[in-house]
Length: 137
Image (cartoon, rainbow, N blue to C red; front, side):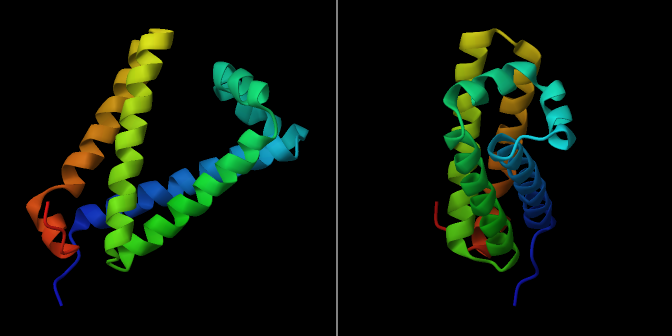
């Protein structure tokens, strides 16, 4: 059996971290408390946007966390669906960063988000990684 490319583990770790963030933020929206409220100090515009949407945003974030967790496990288990999930996730994230740049003009945050998503898309579409997941793209 072919050895997993190191980049697969790196992407999986990133997805596990995204799971933790989505779960913490989702929980703080569904179950507000002082302990989790400090999170909102890190991104006040984001807090305002999530609170405008309401509690449903907390449910959506918990669902996103479940998806990123499953994808991270799937990547580590060489599941093709997890590779596709990661590709779609990072493409959507990159698109969201472009929209954010247009709407907010926050170059630093948007450009760094685009660069990170682009880097993950690049490493996931390298020939060795595609071969590992048996993806013909």
